Image 1 (cartoon, rainbow, N blue to C red):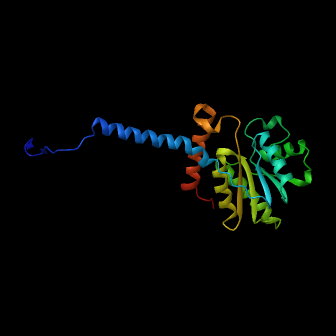
Image 2 (cartoon, helix red, strand yellow; image 1 turned 135 degrees about the vertical axis):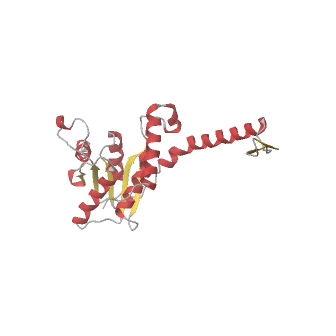
Image 3 (cartoon, rainbow, N blue to C red; image 1 turned 90 degrees about the vertical axis):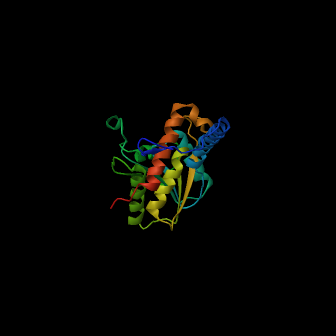
Length: 220
């Protein structure tokens, strides 16, 4: 049947019944549950590849450096490199101006021989700090003729997938990049959605990984 001078026409269409709405809502709920349960294990990838050089991001909390000393004592590594950018807050009050230097000082305080590790401070950048830290390390090793076939990187859990992706981009496909994801003590990783630190960390790292994977391009 045509109406409004032939401008409109009635047509039959299918609509969801209450059973159909229930099925759709159930599928959405299952998808959301799968996302909530699966996103943290996806981000917190753990694929250790002992050997070569051991790398730790200097901004990591002290308990991560406990893992670094144990890892270095357990496996054979040529050296530990501590990466990191300038410290954002409190640097004028501190002896150490970069996270790399602070991390190296932490290892020294823990009793590790200073010949076993070295700080590799990266320059200030407004974004892409993980990439810049990895690139600074590569330039240093290349200048010294020490470009490795293998790096094992230690960082916090949800940050680990993005870290390995960016380090792999810097060092190339010929280098083996291992990653050790250390559980963050600020939240329960099995129930990250129950705390604001967990939500901020996981959702922030998910967005950051998406940017690194699909948007980020290497600077000239």
